[in-house]
Length: 91
Image (tube, rainbow, N blue to C red; front, side):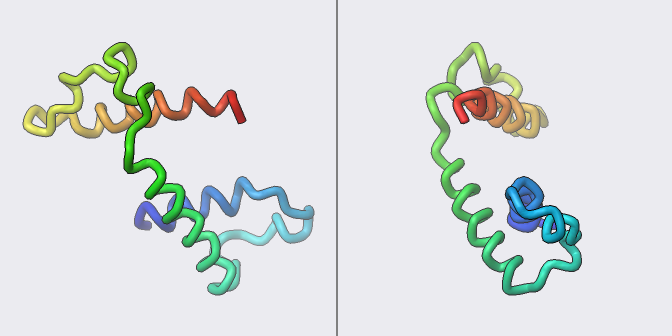
């Protein structure tokens, strides 16, 4: 599963539906509906392209971990997203 599909599914599962509709597993969702969730997923991923100041704050992201040469790019990416997600309390 690619990232767009993963995010689309997460958006689908987070959407407030009526009880009957929400019981439909992602695999059984009509392709037309999935396409709409993929459009939302692409928009969400594109919005994450430019890091926020919180994501770049030295106390939040230890730049040594973000070094792709030393194999820490995954850790740096996760730390940046963790910093971004701390803002979810505002939602």
